[in-house]
Image (cartoon, rainbow, N blue to C red; front, side, top):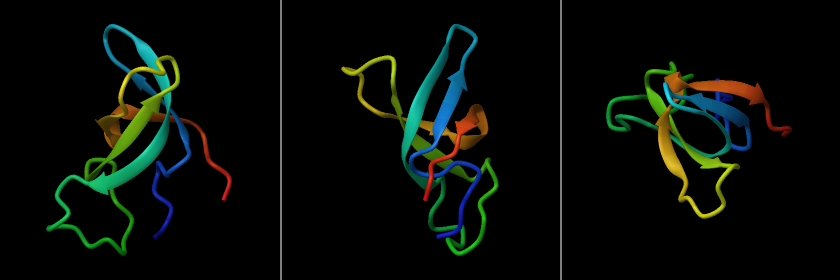
Length: 77
């Protein structure tokens, strides 16, 4: 699969009006997988990422829309 703006292993930041958190991308998938061709690059509005936040070991990973993430560091291949 082609590299997207966010890929598995990337370090990202998720900011809300209350806090700013960093985490690692564990997985990504299309918001509507029946509609999108998986052989093309997704626009950030078309997919979401499963994020493991590094500030909380007990919190379960959480799905976040890609458009709400900021890339801090790309994973090495």
